[in-house]
Length: 175
Image 1 (cartoon, helix red, strand yellow):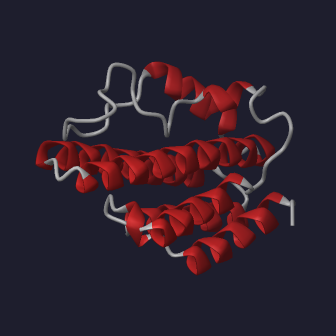
Image 2: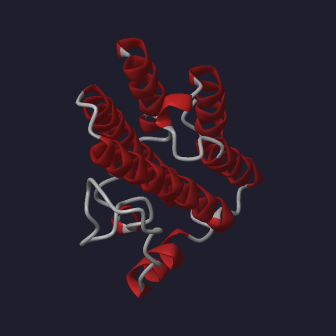
């Protein structure tokens, strides 16, 4: 199990390094809640679908549209948030399975599914906003790769994610 946890954290951490800059948390675009769990959503249960984006997210999208640097900054922030969420989700799932608590396992799986979907949607949304073809392609490919997890962070493939991160870094000019 530790090997799986290490692989998941490592794979997610690869996304954290994509296009990062020191100012990513200071930009208005970084406030876009695309990959965060909506406020009021329970962190350990419920199989509800992701909440619809608010009008504030639409304003954040306008700030990102066609702005490669802002999109790269947002991708780095979103990747970091996803890495933290995936590591927490995996720990939550392992703990629930170890305790043989079926309700906790179901809740952990629901949260994990929601977090994976949110990250995939965020990447796809950023791809739609990108005007740079390489960036659009990299974000779209990452979105598909994350979506292929189908909510199971244990399916993370470090090699594929590393390749996608390299592509994203090149598209952002940080390679």
